[in-house]
Length: 277
Image (cartoon, rainbow, N blue to C red; front, top):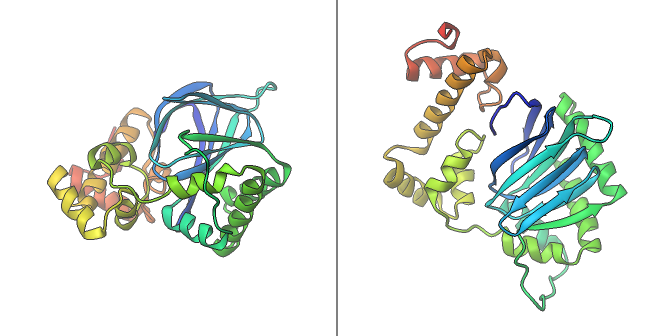
């Protein structure tokens, strides 16, 4: 996730094998090469979005949702609504083990007469789904909902969607399996996202040991050290060009404590974040 002046709000919630991200954009602008590491439900709470893939354009209006397959790379333009209200969205990143668990709880998937080749399924607008997504908005205002409750409610939302679109289950089943992918391309796109090394291994279709071995062959260092360096480099950019403070960015970069972020930054850069001008 790249911080731009047009982004007036961004928060994420790590719920294990589901991750939620809330974005508010105050300007109409195109975001290039947006990478989706996991199969994702993309819900537009206000405004609209145009998603461009190699297959063409998909337009999502207020209250609508689309399903995006894992490892998709899209250009996305975000628009205010007709009354000038900022674009706002919630994205559900559904990890392969979450999808596997969900599929096991459903009835057997009937074979499709033709394979689904599209990378995006436009699921449209459904009031129960809108109500569900609206109920999650307080989460991004530091309100509490249990992880198990969110998981069960996400299962219910997928049940509802699959009843209204028979392709959904088949799409998830074939497009959410761990696939061994190119490490360099993957890591460059998700470098500052908050994924654990175990999650990165699963998302790239590798065991943990194979991921660490392949990673060292490509980058010449460990995943942990490489990720820290990338986050600190990005933090330096934000501190110097955006004039942000360390307290503004440490949580977004995956550090739980400001003191830990400052210590890592000083170890790598040789100066404390507060010394940058």
